[in-house]
Image 1 (cartoon, rainbow, N blue to C red):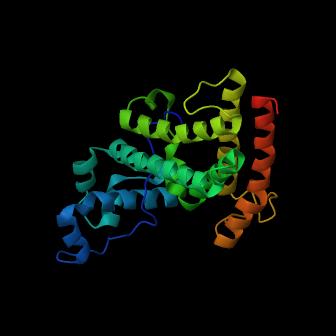
Image 2 (cartoon, helix red, strand yellow):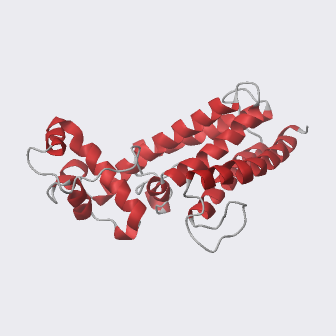
Image 3 (tube, rainbow, N blue to C red):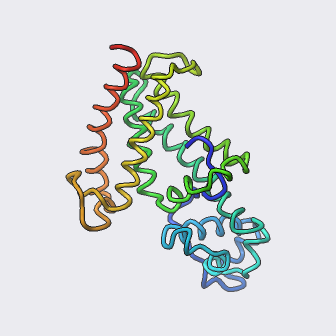
Length: 248
């Protein structure tokens, strides 16, 4: 979540395919009014969700958007430029999801707010696997090459940091002790790891290992996983973090 960079995912889902668009169709008319960039981003996310980075190409993005192969390069320069644009919007979406989790938790219960942040994080990953799979896939040397992307990642991470400050009873923006900083990393690591395992099909509705894929795909199964497994697990973790960070 802190600085990520040259690879990343987007904010309007599911993607719409305009591969059959013809001149004069509504899709083509929309492009004349500035919607082509949006369509390319949506097509890129859909392609990432289906095929991952290994199957990503500007030509296929163009085909799904119903435009010439040169159109994506005209808007984004190259594949890295398009992927960065997808990632920037993905981090914006993640930040919004975390803030919505804060609101669900209520204003009087810091632990509930942070728990709901964690649930929102995993829910975001399950709902938008194309975005999530891209956001954190980059080489270390690439992580500071895009200032906008780095800033969006930091902004999302800052929501988590403020949640942990609330858990510790700290003022907004206050410095963490070393132990408290480990608490931030611990909170992030648990929800991120849970999301990765869920996306890999490692949980069934009861929270155990699953031999098949898609157990968390259906809304009912997803809700059971988030509320019945992740929620109680986060309660335990956050109570422990609060004890370490505050001594109570």
